[in-house]
Image (tube, rainbow, N blue to C red):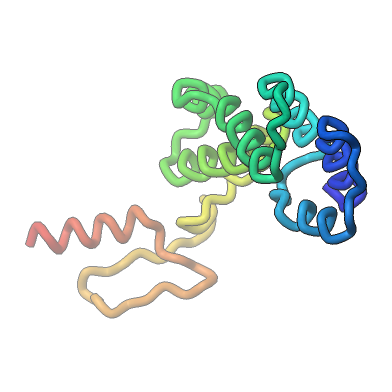
Length: 172
């Protein structure tokens, strides 16, 4: 949301309290304290809901807007069953890809992205897992005979190889 949109939201709040003039300092403070991920539409919806529930003169603050938007977004988060169904429908079975899909989906939704856009973004990112090299590329594995071996940045060690090495050494 830009400064002018934030000012419109602040004016909407002031309408409920006699339309007092807004100083430059008030406007700037309101804009700076408004969460960056809050959209103009979300802020206006929060103001409408607040004054529908508080008709007796209570002032809405910028913190109330941020809180209302976070609550609304949290309520729209998919259930674990829905996330699992989405992964099954898109044939995501690799643990690294599953983790990345879930993380990306929830992060996108928490920033207010539309559900279909969030799923599309999560699918893109899940195909590029952060914990290992993309499938099909050469991967280095840890050789138990060489405990000091390190992976290079261009060929990171997959998490599964690290786990096998740690578990294998514990069994010895």
